Image (cartoon, rainbow over all chains, first blue to last red; front, side, top):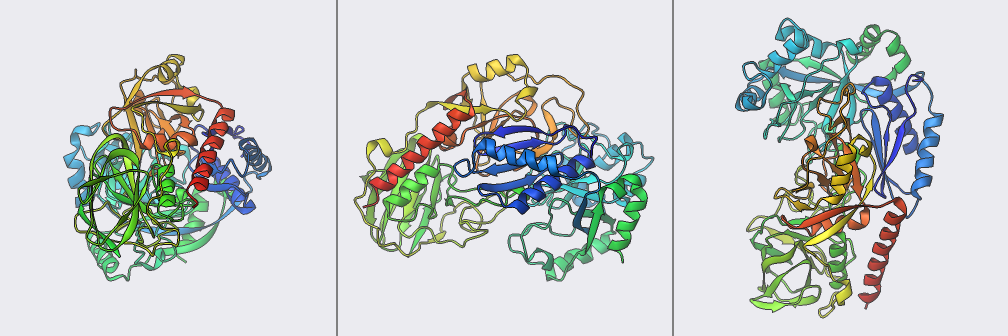
Length: 294
Length: 325
């Protein structure tokens, strides 16, 4: 993590401090933000009301009547000075998310909004495969679903995870967002914009390219499924996700299980070491997947 | 005791002081956009300041009381009629079972609050009764009100009584033209000097798409961001950043055209550079802006922001003293 410059600190009005770890996205930048916000949570500083880690930055909301703004910023700078290097480990969980790629619902939606797309004559998947140098949609799906992804931020709307793939930068999938945002996106669409994938937790507007859909609810105020009993939002920053391509039959079976209230996710606890990952991403990812399927 | 919704109005929701603590999961504060008006309404009817009330937007609802109660209406300026007879705003009134509450259009201001003794007694979700529309939870069935809804009302407190009124200086003001104080920061350094100059010197008007998520402003000159080779992951437009958390009150300018101020139902993050943040003391004033109302942005420093915050607190303390009897 020594390669990262010092973070940039700035006030967001009298109630927020915004800290930009780095201008560009990287796993070390995300990790540093996780380490600082994790330590801030542990300290339970009076006056801190929200701690929001994001991709390469974080946001803190505080009550300036309890802790003065300069003092609050001093606490954060102090934590930055104390967080360790890449030797840092994150106790987290790895989750398998089934995906029906190239599904009929996102296909129907993307066809309705071709006039807002860079390439009206191909689908979002065909376009993404081409601009990332993959010979076919199948090869692209393979690249999207083989290496796992970090949940690097949860937000925009309730429970929506942003995901960053755990591969070297040259292998990162990059796709521009739609030229103009769509006014509709099916709920549980797997989207991708810039270097981030996401899962749309609710139906609504969106600008990310649409690759597929998952049968697994990730946000439910009624908390009907076992993995949503603790909290209506499933994902937390730091979760690791493995996409599992499924067939239409498997998808339909999962949807029926969701409706019956019997659907569950494969979730395993893992410890993630940034240094070990950076030393050999492919080998380290293999050990993570071994723990998922153990 | 409950209240029947005869006509729902344009966007009437149940709101209290809000739901802090879940922004890192994309669940925003929610709560009354004009927090002062909510506190005032509750104090007038003898409630705790944070009881849930109805937030009415631009076009207020028509309501039928199905029990005896005490109510008050605060916020925007509009005619308030109890069974067709005008009653004062910013004052508490008795209502009997079968009484109808109806409203004229909002002459100024954009949000009126209907507080009822005992508060609107919808279930508490994640610590609050506030409606969060995008997430479809909280408030009354997670949505704005519809005709026919029956709103449960809690048990009135011992302090509930009619005839309480706020003095003129403590009522909610809703000027059609105002100055909003902004602390520059966040990605302010990404703006060209000409954009900094025009942002603070132009007069902006509230655009039609101004709601609880954010207020969009138009009529100012476009704001140019400094050209650069975009950082990895940031997206191609110069106004793009690597997706980050958005402070409440922060001002983003997608594609450099129309600034948007995020309010209490904010999207919690995204990829547009924010150029500063409206200070906490001025957030309630945004809530009372109608489409077409004009604003100028004024740059202030942290000292001024904290002084304004202290004044805001002092005004609430004054309310508490004046209405405690």
